[in-house]
Length: 311
Image (cartoon, rainbow, N blue to C red; front, side):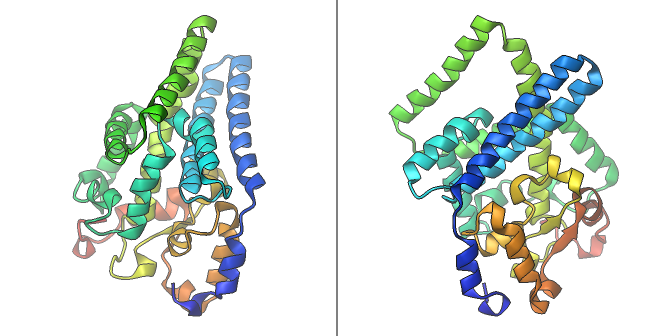
């Protein structure tokens, strides 16, 4: 990143780790999930259950955002312990592995928006990631996630990609299998399979994958100029309610993250403010207001003559 936009000393300061903030974020996400389940069970009505699905799916997305932090080693200096904490409390619950995700994600950073970018090539040319889109298709596509169809497709694709980057040992694989087996035994003994399906699988196969798709579009697709660094990645300034599902733990500051991946999520708002103090940066950076407003307009209203078919 050109030094004229921000002083190196500021970046160094903002890159300082505060582990308790990440640990608190993990803990609070689990508390919110437990609270959503408890309130739904207490209320016992369809509206309360619907709210719980949205809240839990949003927190599952929050786990994906936190896994991203762990993938960049933005928790503690002990990398081995950091990975185990992430897997046990963040990655494995959403069927992921932080090491496999890291190998894929760091390649994305190294080769962003090129044919060597593993995230780019799997989406390039597909209808879901070609813009502008007709509003009818866009609506049906989003509804497909709520009907499990889009989520199932994306889950299979994600598992295949992560498996391709999986270099874990046999001991690791056995430990992970034992982790899932232990929960299966507990669910069987306690008769908790139905609550597990209602309060974990349903949010995961609907809201979670829907949020991942929307965030994926927001980060690198629709009305982008890939020839310019500050125009090839988007930062979204969300409305407060959008943080519940689409932008947990600062993932909306994606341009800032690509420029300075050493900065942990809790310092990204300060990094954004520091960068926006530069008139050159503020004039060039791709900043969009709202996922449900600005992003929608950029996805649907781009003139065909300006479209590239690559986002």
